[in-house]
Amino acid sequence: QVQLVESGGGLVQAGGSLRLSCAASGSIFNINAMGWYRQAPGKQRELVARIADGWTDYAHSVKGRFTISRDNAKNTVYLQMNSLKAEDTAVYYCNAEIRPRYYSGTADYWGQGTQVTVSA
Image (tube, rainbow, N blue to C red; front, top):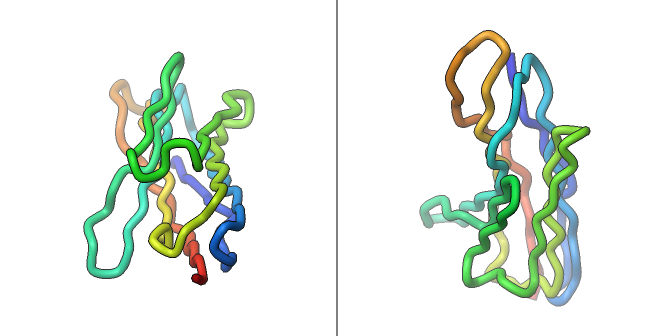
């Protein structure tokens, strides 16, 4: 089995910072891209940032404020969020494209989500 476990969400004032972490564990052969998505109440889930070997990608709304990074030795992805705004309030989900040891292909895995609330 493979699982993703997130941590680091919480309540912060506008202009503040938070750092999210997501660790993948289980029977993992290798991990391709990892990323963060978010879903605000009444809205669709949207991409925040993704990272793979040699590239990163960000939503326009977070460029210059959020930074995604990755520790391959720990199978962990991070999201440093600075200059937070009220509109960043959402449940943040970790995502990873993983090839398990027991399967020859890759599959998408999701974390359980962590709430980020930014007060105005």
